[in-house]
Structure formats: structure tokens, C-alpha cells
Image 1 (cartoon, rainbow, N blue to C red):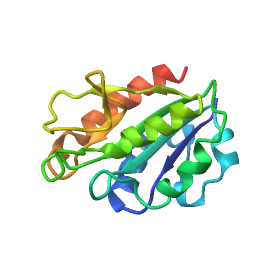
Image 2: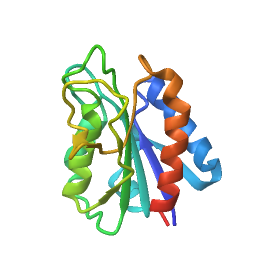
Image 3: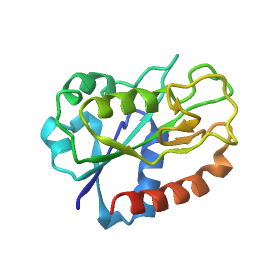
Image 4: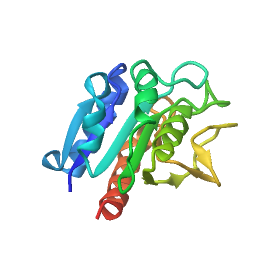
Length: 167
């Protein structure tokens, strides 16, 4: 089973987290693909997909993710498991905290993928988020601005969860 980690390289922080996830998984276990160079066939080539994004401004996807969404929703990703990680700032953007995770979740589920890797919203303090559904976050959400000390532990728990889900 092949796993591809697609992430937006537009910010150093997303790249930093993508590399931490790859290392935690085992560098030889995951192919890492910058979203800037991803094509339709790249998503279809993997059994499991990890997608990573930051959230810009008032709840928008960064460049390249927003440009690939129209192509992404045309894919047939049935029988593929997708996990999403995202970065957000719950203090300065409490009304759209990590919305990018929710936007990607909607796009991947629209093409038949099964989402895995939900996490608890406990220990976060925000007003609203597209990443929140039925009291759970739709993936790993990290706040490097306000909770950097929790990043490594959250990644470690999430990767352990994904290893089980991807079996």
C-alpha cells in the first residue's frame, strides 16, 4: 500500500509539519509531493493520501490548493483513505480556525474518499471552524503560533492513529 503526502509549500510551517509527519511515519513509508507540482494521476497513484494545508486570511486555502480543487473533485477516489492535517491560529482567527482542513475534507469526500484521522477538539479555543464536524476535528489541526509545545505530541498520536487506519 502506497501513501502520498501532498502539501502546500507556500509556507515554511506547512513544510515543517509535513516533514515531521513523514519522519514520524518512517521516511521510506511515505512519498512527499508538493501540491504545486501535483497532477490528477498523482492522487490516483496512491492507496492512501495525506493532505496538508494552512489556512489563509479569513478561512481560505492557500494558492495551489485552491487552484487544484476543481480538478480534485473530478477524481474517483473510492476505496482510498484520506487524512488531512492543517495549520491555524485560534487566537487571531477564532471564527475560521483551520478552515482549510474542512474545505479539503469536503473536496475529498465529494470524490468518494473515506476520511480518517479525526481528532479531538479538546484543548483548542476558537469560535468556529469548517474543520469541526459533530464535535470532532476532521484531521490533525496544529496551532504553531499559540500551542507549539503540543505539536510533536499531537503528530505522534495522529501518526499512530493513521498507521492503524491505513492497514
